[in-house]
Every structure is written in structure tokens, then in C-alpha cells.
Length: 149
Image 1: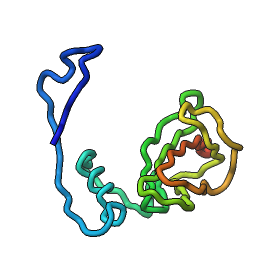
Image 2: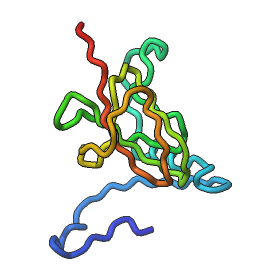
Image 3: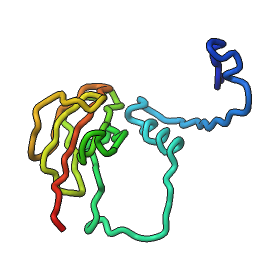
Image 4: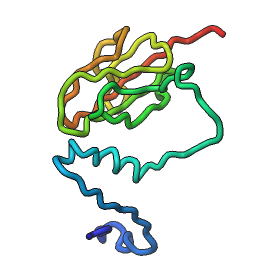
């Protein structure tokens, strides 16, 4: 197993020093898409943090959730130029089809953007439902409904 091999330019000593690696074997039958290996790899490399307390899922639903198993939400962040949110996801199983993002808060509008958050489509209202292609990365600007509380 090759774990690290760095080039010698511009830093001839880039691979020197102490490195920590985590790896696992995940035997499975069928294809990797059917096995859930992508989710297991994510769990291995991104362990959950736990905090003391409780949340009632009926009172406080998921912040953002895709309605399909072959899409992973990679990023939720504040937009660089407004109070909107940027949501980025990718399709990881080589499948195509509809994807709906469900939010745990009311949404005024949404708009597809490029990776630099520039508009790449019309501003829309209603459900954020799109069709995704195999291995596609999609980015959206989501504007929450602001309350006057």
C-alpha cells in the first residue's frame, strides 16, 4: 500500500516528518455503489462529534437533507456577499435522477450558482428540486425567510 509520495519540487523535503493515516478494509458483495462503501468511508474519515443534550426531531428537523441516497451534501456556508446560504452537494454513485433538498427552515428563494457563487441560473421560489447527472457537483444560493422577531 502506497500511503504518501510527494514530488521534490518546489519542496524537496515535503514528505519528510511524521504522518498519520487511517485506513480500513470493507469487504462487501455486489458493486461498490450497492455496498454503501461511500457512506462507510465518510464515517471513517469524518467521525461524529457528540454533545450532551437532546433534540426533538419533530420540533427541530434536519437543517438540510437530500431526499436520495446517492447525493452527499458537502458544504453549507454563509454566502460571501449576502445573508444567503450556499449549499453544495455532489452525486457519488454514478446515477442520474431527481434530487430534492429539504430544509428545516422556510426558504424565500433559491438560485443555482457556479463554484465561485456567481449566478448560474434563474432565481426560483418553491421546492428546490433538480435533476442530477453522474458525479455532478451542484451549488445553490438559498435565501431563508427572515422573520421580524
